[in-house]
Length: 468
Ligand SMILES: Cc1cc2nc3c(=O)[nH]c(=O)nc-3n(C[C@H](O)[C@H](O)[C@H](O)COP(=O)(O)OP(=O)(O)OC[C@H]3O[C@@H](n4cnc5c(N)ncnc54)[C@H](O)[C@@H]3O)c2cc1C
Figure 1 (cartoon, rainbow, N blue to C red):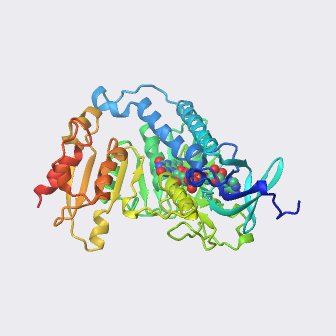
Figure 2 (spheres, rainbow, N blue to C red; figure 1 turned 180 degrees about the vertical axis):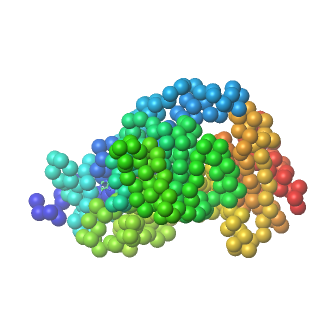
């Protein structure tokens, strides 16, 4: 068959590239609308970065580390308390593998139940409606009326950084480490770098965190970041911010990894995690064949409906850039499919929650004090310190806090910021009230279960109202 001919069997209403959260939800949404859908995944395992190397394994590691290290229990049982002495990589990988295997089964079952046809192989465009799927058995041609590109990203590499997956590794390779280093250099203090830095620090690894930016996570409330830095320093983390790494290497004689900094310093360690951004996988899709041009890091530009410059070709998930979260990717995939098949919806940007699974964890929704100050919008804050909450005491967290930001004249909630135990869960209470246009009085007048961390909303509301 000539390269651009396809049979009607291989014609689809929608072809989705990538089985990560964006691809899965795009495919299932279209299938629920009774469309014929193909999903192409080049890896043997389904689920994308989310299930295989990113979100799920890193969050299982975190749970395993918190449990085995006994970190949260030390307030009660002493600084040397641990559930297991000598925690090894296998302890973490074992638990991650179990969860990942179950997640993969769940996703496969969902796709099967919804009659999405899954093709294994590398997808590339041949023309505006034809896609080639190549694997070791040969290639198949598929014809699509519409496409959702959800090809995700991979860790960005630099020719100067000799990544070997053992002593110098990226975030996709953490899972494959044979042993835990005693000292770790983390290059890149973005969310991924910080999450892993805090996990290793909780295991007692001496962590040095390097970033050329002078400040951490600029979109997060400054008080929250100050608290994070304070708590990470208590775990022994050393911050070297505003420092550019010029080279990285391995000194075989001393069996040490080093990072040379532009300022002339050299930082040494047992291993180095290179976590400096991610590169989109769009470079492997033969986009030249359809005349679609990504930006420098391969990101695709879309409009508010996730449509690229070519109307029947959509893109969703990490390949379109910020916020590049599993949570938002799922929604973008669903919304892209909804738009293709006639329903229009949107994600209000002020309602996107951010969950940062550092130790301690951070979560936020809505505006920060810094944004409101910049935009000259008056606000007041109410704070609940975990040290005042009975539940937080029981959990061994007396450092956390929840901050409500609200309009002092209308009392409407503008933002919610939490650091501490269960932050990523309880933030959704604030998100719901924010979404419904609620006021801080709602929290004052509501009875919360006691003792809970959710009670922080009431304590913060009372604190805020007292300031007016
Ligand atoms: C260490 C780490 C921790 C994270 N933690 C969190 C978290 O706690 N919470 C959160 O919300 N997000 C988290 N994320 C982000 C989250 O994993 C991503 O936002 C999400 O996976 C993006 O989904 P996606 O569908 O866009 O792409 P991906 O999950 O990257 O999936 C893309 C898929 O497309 C496939 N593909 C690519 N090109 C082709 C091709 N040409 N042909 C066929 N298949 C192709 C790839 O093999 C891949 O399976 C984390 C990421 C990392 C790296």
